[in-house]
Length: 178
Image (spheres, rainbow, N blue to C red):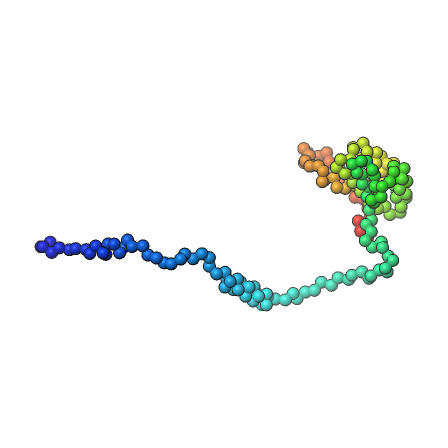
């Protein structure tokens, strides 16, 4: 190189390794402008959305007189058997004789109400069979009779085969609410 010496100043090398200070790091961006933008966008979309152009008219029933209380009375009767074996007809405790008389009277109605049997979880099984015997003796187990609430206490498995299942019968009974 014909006697020419190249030299690099040492302060240049030190400058490339110097740490730069950018100030404090950003902790959290301000969310207020973003929220204002989103709310403005929602307000604009609601203002520009098309209005409902259809209407559904429903004829409501006429109001009843103040003394009429049969509107919300359900058209089913419920027998609840608690863990002590006490039978209740529509929440009223009854003896077996009273229940038998009530069931016989209910069987003579021209329009039968639905009959729901609701044993509690710890009800003794023989007691439930006694109540079922009373229901069968009154002839109410063929129409509109069903167990109620027993799905809360047991887990039901699928049958092995569906070939032996009896098809359901169509039975005409009163709806739950008239």
